[in-house]
Image 1 (cartoon, one colour):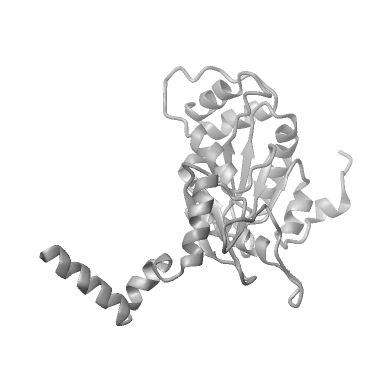
Image 2: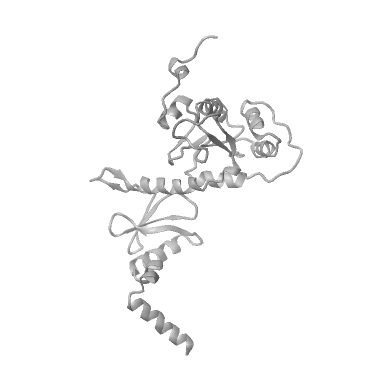
Length: 268
């Protein structure tokens, strides 16, 4: 009897406008959403549906899967799926899919685990820069382009920009990169050892085991859009892959180039 009474009370709550219940469980009052979600679950068994919401375009729902950054759209019937589609608002001239992606990236960056990075702190912060919101760089210690970028990173730090370097070994391309990353992370001075590795010099064995956050770093990179190393993520969620000059990176941050950068190389 008690179970029946509880069921009656629940139904009464819904019929009488239990807004919080309906709001927390939109599928209870949105059969189209329920049908579409069931279809998605059947097509992606075992996957976790995240960020489910009505798309700006009527008749579609948008969502992500697991920790993947890619955006999917499904129609109300659950028959049609758009994968990695860009939805544009032509009236406002906006890429709505990209705006959604950037919003998700900013959420991730607000909680990024800086304790898993090797931090390069400037002696004085440039205007608008915050230590809690550094530029993120994902580096493989054996990646030739990462080595080229590292000198530019040093210039960026000298210009007042904090940089957090996450070790991101790509073992399938650079055999031994994982062990080298572990040796860097487990060393007494991680920054010096990273500088050594990215200068192309041998990295000695750390001599003591420690927990290196390499898997966490690889997952974070995937959540932020992935990309080949070096992979750079700006505080506002923009990303760029490959080697860039310090002047280019500063321009992307809205900073003017230094006098030395404007003059180019100066003979010594």
